[in-house]
Length: 182
Image (cartoon, rainbow, N blue to C red):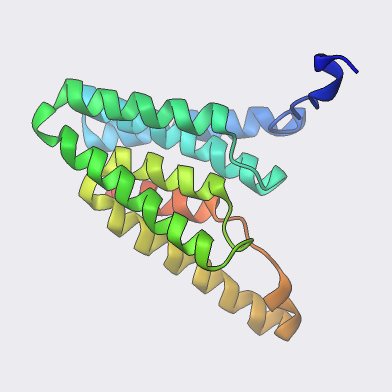
């Protein structure tokens, strides 16, 4: 068997009919974030990542995966940008990225299968973006997923407890809300 045959093809992250709506929401969210935050180099990075979070949430909703080829380079880019734009706060962003990633990694280790490694890497990206404010984003995101879970249990009963929710949309919402609150 050749090496090419041994490697499975990478599935498309989104169905073609979903690309245009996701791109539209992503673009307008980025523009709204930039308008809200003001036009600075760092806010341009934040707006771009805000748009990227829409893509990651949509991909996770559809495939239950958060692609490494997107989230890891984005996290690296944001950390480099943090040092370039504001070297004094660069360390804060590195520490927040490591702490947020480690927090979700511990949760994934305690309850395997409940969280995926993509969620851990997404937390790393959020820490890189938000610095110390990542705690606010995680609290908002986990509150949203808890509220959604409670609604599902109220509507479907105990059978809803077996349903797994993708975490990226809730973490993305928490990060976007944190950016809007700043």
